[in-house]
Image (tube, rainbow, N blue to C red; front, side, top):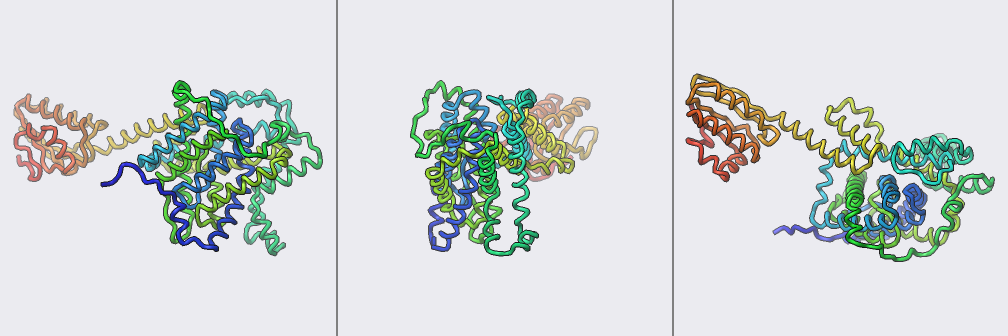
Length: 550
């Protein structure tokens, strides 16, 4: 008998079977690369979320280690994600950092439960139009949240909602800092240009062919921007705000373990943010895992285990909350970098976390000189790559239902928040699905005589389609007493309780006028429901295989 609970079996245990030196070298190389890429992103995500940079760094380290060590994927990298920026900022503004930690821990418990009870596959039922809509909406909000540091505006605290942010930015344009704007713009342009300059076959590669150039080309763009522009700003003493001027020193020691002030009253207050963190974390991590499966060209690659992945995500979020971290999930950009760098197992993700920890413990004082405008440029680049903007151009190729869901979710995410967007989007998706399914059910007249009516039923007779039985009732009531009604159910594929009730009402209307109802060629599912409910026994000459004759 199959257990209702998922087996806790990390992918790392399988990956280590037959592990050898060649794979270790590849994994260490991939881990180093991803660790370097994750460094500026972790700080930028935390700052944009209204937290201190160390919250993002230690989330990337602790959650990244746990997700790789205990997860259900081969190459996925976990940590703070751009998708969480808007959510976390709103929670911090509304509930405070302490309650963010409680919501993160509770979301971890919920994620673990989803995986434990094998509900990981349910995430796949979220329509792609909703996922694209809220992803693009989050990308817009991330970009908007970075305008303040990009332009160097002197704003003490940014509000959380879209229109208030625009109003606040407009009111402070007088404090525009051209030095910050220049650093952010150069960073953003450099990130777009860097991979194109050193792409295989480019003029730069042909002109400067050599091992040194090829090695330099593999250095991630965000690291190049961070190092060069920070050094430039420091050397020229540019008057632009830095990490040190805003946050002071970054702790170069291990984070302290601390228990949040937990109470059931607080948990009840945080139901909405907890559900939002859990839902977004589940969707993002499993989408990332699917992308990783598609990109991994290894013939021995085993697809991800969604339930194990959710359990690992849950443990990571639960643990990181006790070290002052922020919500974590699978990160597509770092996962893609990991795969393209040659990762063969979760060991690469573990190395990435260790590399980050080493950098934080050794080089934390150097981070004080990083201009915030450079981090804003990196996040603007992340926002651009995060959005699937081409989907707006392709909307004309899809149905009105798809367009309504995508645009509606996008606007609700931008104007209200992700929770409202997903809730309304899912309800709207269900309504549109019901409408679509009801349109597929039809009742076709086959024959008619003075004392008999013959119809054929097509599709699924369920609560959304029961109104289509009404014309038969009306036809019976308009005829003389004793009319027989024959229903050919050979094409009726499904029947629910509401559909059965509609047939009951039809049967009563026919009997009331002295007639008789015949239903023949009934398929297995509708027949089973009719028999269990007793409806079949109440119909004289009920037939299941032979056609009724007039």
